[in-house]
Length: 391
Image 1: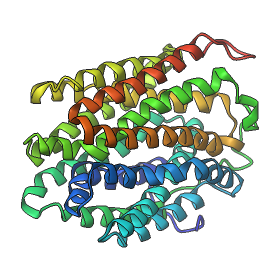
Image 2: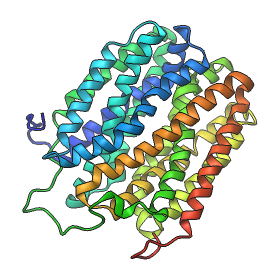
Image 3: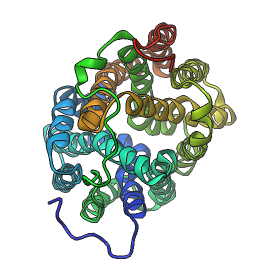
């Protein structure tokens, strides 16, 4: 599949940006309508947590394996195309009943989750050779997510929650089509630069490398409750679907802005300092959420999303790329993804259970998990790599 024809006249960067535009677009529909649609099918908060956590649990096993296979393939593109096709096929089968929903939702999200770290690793290497900026390229993914969630929020009162199925499946098919147009990512022998960084994953499996990634994975896990539960929680607070879409959109706009400016900030600050900063902001954000801040307060807290999520994510990707060679690029990103999925399973199931018990006070559970992640990052922040300066 990696040999599929590509769009003539478009640069590799533009073709990659087009794919990123569609990569997270189905998630935008899920953020606004997913939980509401699932609740309409008779699923309670705990079952919604299970449906969202199931693919993340499977990714604990598959992410590193998929990354390793992608690294051994002639190019990373083939893995991205296959994963996009599988995700689209499962999305088209999403229907009725808890068992069927669990199977097809998990299949669609699992295949999607498997290609995200491969895409990030491939794009990171592409911009390193071309002189582009990964943050700006990745921002197209957030823009696609933002566009869909705003449109879904405004369309939902007229079309109903069943609109979710059309958005989720249709955009998954579009994502597969755009994957076919991706460029070759791997350098040719003439383009290849001297090997830098670890060539085997075990070379960097040390506390200074693993702790910030594991700690920020806990931070990421607490952010997954936004897609899984926020639409439902805010609707139950009598916030209209249009406003739910706008609230989530504020976070996406904030994230996009951070992605665009990250390239100017990163060279001046230690990556682990940026990771730690995002963790601290996350603790403050979730702690404030637990006090039911009202609509105005929610807009303020949502505006912090770029700092609590976007800043830490890009810093982690840059940290991994700095210390690993191309031969383990996707595998290393896959390890990072596995850590994120592990923490997401804990966060989603725990938040779903707490929400059923104590409602909005479930945010204190998210705050506690974020504090644990912050402690791990701070511990690593004090440790230098064995053969280099603090980073």
